[in-house]
Image (cartoon, rainbow, N blue to C red; front, side, top):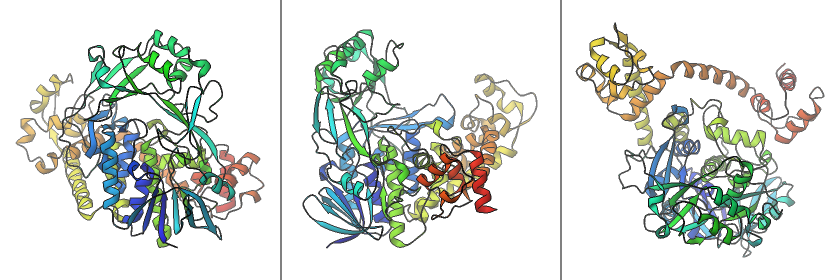
Length: 622
């Protein structure tokens, strides 16, 4: 029987990152997929990033993952969202070529040493003495492994719905994965049912672009990856239009045939990304909803109708779209549909994504109840890293919520669970000013390098960047500026002029003042400004943000110190919460269920009160 160190089930965004990470850490890896042509296929919108999601992508990149580089190589439009707001909520987003993304992802997989691909479906998993030992495929092949990562996406017993018509499948024209859920349930795992959806696709040639609003990319696009120097390709525009009263009336005619409203769909859908029929019920006071028309690639006429996710009958979808400005003569290439699938409530995994029930078995992606490519990739790289570490007998890798959105994501899943598809938002991160998209390399690349996922030359570049930041920050903090040097500039940006010398750092803290613009003034160009440091856009940006928001950052660092104190108070893995009689009944039940690894983690479990935490601290630490 062929044996691998790590087997990864599923070649979506979680499976890609998991398999690449394990292989790069020296393990022999087998990536199992039902269709080798579907590696990295973008099931829904061909886009990467967005609010908070873009932060996840940059963090995956800083750890040594591939999503950012694949996005950079296949992007057709790049935008930095929320630029009008503070840097804590800036988020990169790219529109990507759907086919090119899958081809590029497969290229990364096939180029990786020690990584093999098999086209088959896993139907059974085997354990001995509480540890994973192997799998069996639908064709009867048995394979042995030391660690197993399950990242099956929406394919576990998948069923697709359009109107009252249902068909089995995990994605359009692709079969479901059958057998694996039952195998895991036999081992004692608890499963649930969730739902997600996708909108119709339409023919670009049938859109009246004179009736819609163009949404171009950024004039100076920023790449996702710290290893991509620049984006040089021409960008493709997206377009904005809106539904109206007539659209909503047409949609209502199909409610009696809606699988969601008639009870045909049992799974719970994403509250923060509702279907168009759900929107007009929940937000009945809104006269219109945004619709983004997003091309699926450079060389295709297929357009994704973002904001129009639906499972209504095809004829209702078509009729409603024809009432939307710009879509009056639209040709629908494929109707939208909803897909129901199995997931395993995430209280069953640790912060490493290893399951409590079976050692060296990891869950990553939508199997844990998440929604989105980015959330899947973030879990995938953590699961792949930890799978490799278990094989090598090394200490596990945990990302804390104080140091990354990845930590927030996993911490939320494990401690709070989810009854609906989980989506990342900046509001979920209490330390979001510290977890910005621009500093992911400074936060996480040290881990990626230590794990062997970040090349030496890339890490040396980071260390040089840190030196430049320190040099420029010292200059900004100490430099005194006379009124004559900056008053013309200050008046041009609507800021009050100086009457006496002032520290450069104080000027930078003004709302309308930009450090990059100040350094272009004659006074600084002829001064002993650290020229090399100031010539790097990313360096100047870091110094400006940290100077401008210094007070808030100091406050968050103090909060993180308090957070870390509780995180360092560990709880033994075999600790029996049931014997602590002073705990409330609810707390005892939740603690037994989640099995927290620290006092800090225990304090974030819903139903565990401060009084319960005090009892635990006395019991454990005296």
